[in-house]
Amino acid sequence: MWLREEGFGTLVQIILEQQVSLASGRAVYEKLLAGVESLTPENLLKLSDGELKSMGFSRQKASYCRNLADAVVTGSLDLPGLSDLDEEKAKERLMSIKGIGSWTADIYLLSALGLPDIWPTGDLALVSAVQKLKGMATRPTTEELERISLKWKPWRSVAARIFWHHYLSERK
Image 1 (tube, rainbow, N blue to C red):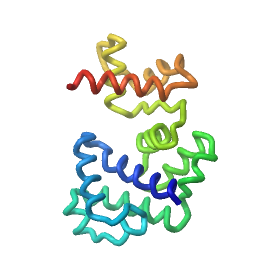
Image 2: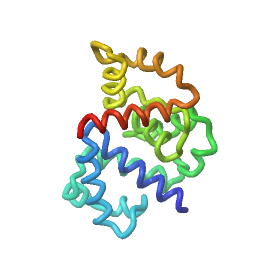
Image 3: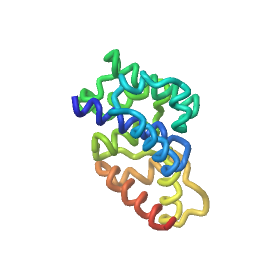
């Protein structure tokens, strides 16, 4: 039960952080946590659109989080069972939920499941850090990022964390 609830909360937070600053996504997530007794799929589904909006959810993110909650409640997404799958199958299962794309799935597999070889090529902070540390004149394409990452297989998650650390340390 714990992994189901913990995994659900983590995925909600990642969805809220899609295409916005981490601080903005985190602020909405904190409001959500303050607005429910515990963050479960069932409790999220009980919140009205107005309640979610007052917490800072956009209409689209409310829809995505409801899709996720519904999938967990109905059993079409078994969050604890993802750890039994290989990376590709787990990513495929996550991406079958509307609102969970490649970036969201990669971040979940890397951060929540702790898989060692996840390289989220769609992450802008990662792209920026690779560009800077590799001395590239322009941002690397997805293909270039993938090629660059091959030397770190099977530990690309570690490399991603190092690049993120550099990116965040440069911003402070």
